[in-house]
Image (cartoon, rainbow, N blue to C red; front, side):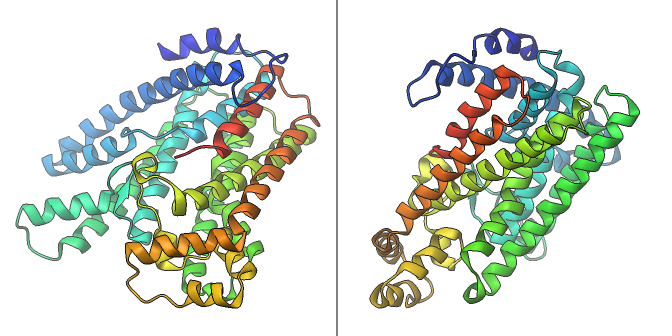
Length: 383
């Protein structure tokens, strides 16, 4: 199995190897990540096959519904959250067998799918990972079949249910981790907190779109902290430590918290840049949506703060809808304000702070080097 190949790759990651743009650790992490993704996907595939079969027994239509959810879970993705959870676990326990905690790591991917499906409905997003979002695909199927009712509402309603089902599946899969009951209960407490913080961040994100004039950079970063940093990096790291039974190491918890918040915020800041300047072929999402909607990301709030009066009139004076040429012009204006350069500095500062935090606790040396590499990979990505 893929999990059996992980140790061989990880042993090639040594503390003597520096982390830079062309260093050997990137190749090692790439090989490791492929194996971890395969191990997580194997776990998800086995689990979901049984769940789809069980729902098919209720009704053939239920089987199709469950299969749609399964296919979306397995449709790709970087598996960032299981990766950070693994290194949180590995940093606490060192080199231990992976199999007992694999269900817990895979759980985070089901939680992520729940969040993505609901987020796409709330944002009315048309594409995700280079393919139609769940609600859009379901609406198209409804229309093609000539069914009664509004296709858009049908697609959105079923997508909400698919997200809900993924949340339930996540709970079921977590319970399969081969851990002592007391430890699993502690893991569950942290997992529940992660879910609450994700919902809080999503609400703040929606509120910001409804009242952008009252938003600040600090508040945009708070959204990033709870919507992204918490359940992408910080909480998965602590989740991993709790899988290892480490819940009372104040230094390790503080180091993971600081690293996680910094890299999580930097991850979202990079996402904000990609949302405006990324290549849709690479990101799998259309560019410019934040400019079209006026969403108060840290990038766009900064641009308005730093803009000259003439630039501000351009940023705030577009009509609705905003066409491609207007989006391209707005993207140029944002660069001219200096906001893009400022965001790049903020990303660099957070990476530096995160790496410094790792030096404050007793973290397994292989995990320390890997986390340093992941900090660069997560914040300098193109998708």
